Image (cartoon, rainbow, N blue to C red; front, side, top):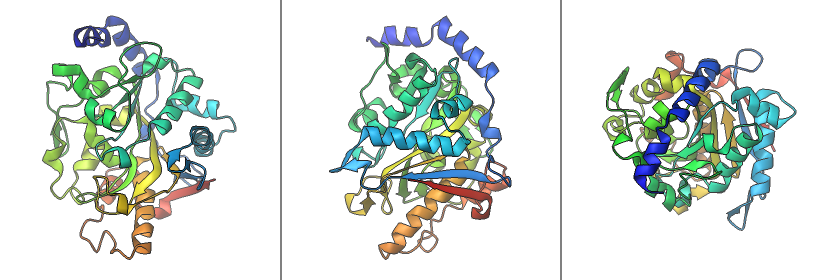
Length: 336
């Protein structure tokens, strides 16, 4: 599709009306992350070693089945369709924010993202109202994603595909953050799935759920200095429109990286063959951090704290009321 026609369609009055209806009727699930008994945040670690990857390639039926079992465990449902309907309605325009910056080896797998899109459609969300996105269309293509802007399929493109409408023109403040937010988030989506990956990061310590949100602003490089201990990531996640639209965190951990990230380094990856799910993005990061630390210990590497880059921002996030970083406040359930 020609860019002019594409831009005209995404700004059509019909889409704007749909966004308004969805925004008015859906609850901000990001405001109430603790769902398990005892007021703890429930995090699902769903794994199927030897099944999700076959000869190094994703196994779509196993991925879809495990995702369904994981969402049921997260929301106490026997039927995965009912579980997805707890979070999303047919009126929603659902943005699926993926992470493709690290390259094909340590980006979201198209098969995992497709499983999420299929689950949303089974729950009644029309395919045209699902937008898989990241910062740059070119990075998405390098990771194996096909750019889709029309037809009866979920949309798939980067913020840059919107041209000079990629980001809002006004700078918005949230604590220490002053940025222009992607119009995919601000104007197109009523709901957001934060779909990061499980990996080490040489500045923030980890890049899992919260770090993935740097992809929604125009100037993330401005906030990378001492990002592991400064309030940048919590302040970004506290931004009201972002917090209100974030409904679910799904971490693609088929392949994970435990050192020398965020760029792909094959020698530091391993087939974790899992998916992490949670409503509390702070708790998701806490559990993912523990997984990475365990693997670092097995490899004879120092801890992230010993390396001077422990993700201290998680404690800041808990103090701000964003979620739980204390493991004692997290209920971790393993699904196999």
